[in-house]
Length: 178
Image 1 (cartoon, rainbow, N blue to C red):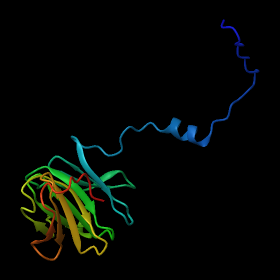
Image 2 (image 1 turned 180 degrees about the horizontal axis):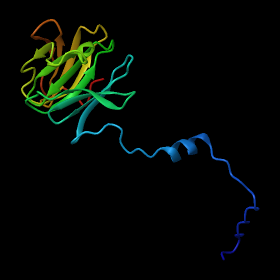
Image 3 (image 1 turned 45 degrees about the horizontal axis):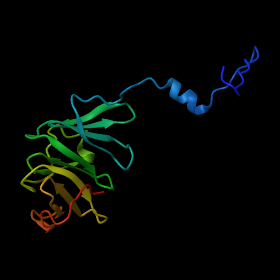
Image 4 (image 1 turned 180 degrees about the vertical axis):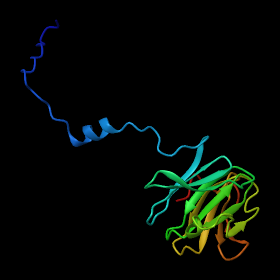
């Protein structure tokens, strides 16, 4: 035994330590994963309005999950290239996706259950010449920004085909857009 230390006293018999609410919660949590995907997930986003669906991208697939039932609601698998970004608009009416080949597609959130074809309602082909990593909407919800591997940030109008503004390549090192 070390000098200056005293042994611990044993607890009396019948002593029952009560668990805190946090300890009870974490001891009951046994589920490792709720939403299963076949590969690495490259992007996730939650629908900002009820029913708060969850979108995830994995390889050439976009899957929208019902968070109440923890089951897939819609699976979009007609992409020709891997999907790297998924983003809901703030009012919850659009779901935007960006692909490895530089395309941006928008889907109607309200038609996910009804439409069997799951075709995009708006597409921007060759928005960038390389992989698009992120999408974000502006406050007016009429424009969106896309950021690609070439370091270019482009601002787009959802009603027009051409980009409105573009940052020069390499002028600013962009890490993320929010």
